[in-house]
Length: 365
Image (cartoon, rainbow, N blue to C red; front, side, top):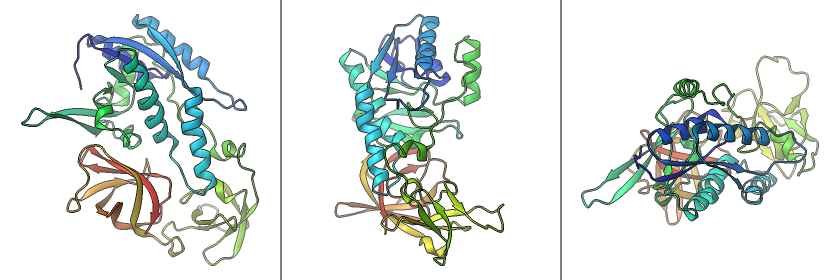
């Protein structure tokens, strides 16, 4: 963690406990701290607590005796995150809006705002870590690492960060466990100490994706097929479902209700999905090669002779893989076939606890 006494840092305060403790820790270390509540875009048809969250952020700043600002990024968030997400779903891909939120908003527009206002750093409550390394020629580089708390690690959502950005980013709680953060918040009498963790889409909160998309994409009844092509149920639109999902569709006359069905394939043109009780069904054509697009390598690009750990989804167990470049394409070769390859999702590459980078899954090969 950086230790820069009297350096100016703008802390993104969400109104939650993690960012609140982040601000408190930075002030204790001697930074010139300003709290910033980032106002995103919120649908007018959904109940939203952003005003309450903003008040909580203000209360934290008042307790810590630090300045408070509100940064309105509503238009930017709608264009760069929400519109992007809707476009991706419409073409049958499964986007990761939290990754885009970090790239375009928190470490895009917010970082730009901070620099333009004389700040040296921005800080957030992400559970991730950075480490500065210096080579013999005294050239420094920043390594992005997993958060210490494995259950809360958020490094998966940060693979788009660059060296230029990381030099200006601090993650004050990345070396702590969630329980320790809670204890610190209570010890400091922070008003957010007992507040529940936020869930769901960045800035919007807990939201049912099907209900959200239904406001922009008209639901259309379709057929649910089993592995042999037999119609066994219905759904409200293949566009709303993703590979591996086990909810959001209806299967009639199911004999063993205790055993869930998983989406293993979908056909947008026919508006059908295929389901199976086994996620590794042959119908889903498990693959071990993935083509990436929109890649970003935080330090050096991957070397083919190295065995990396990759994650295809946030909560998924990592898979050993090798990564190679063929002309302009980056290809990931998994050590074992996977049936959960969803175009549009982020694939993140790790070497031990360091984030090498990642990309967006284009397709299985």
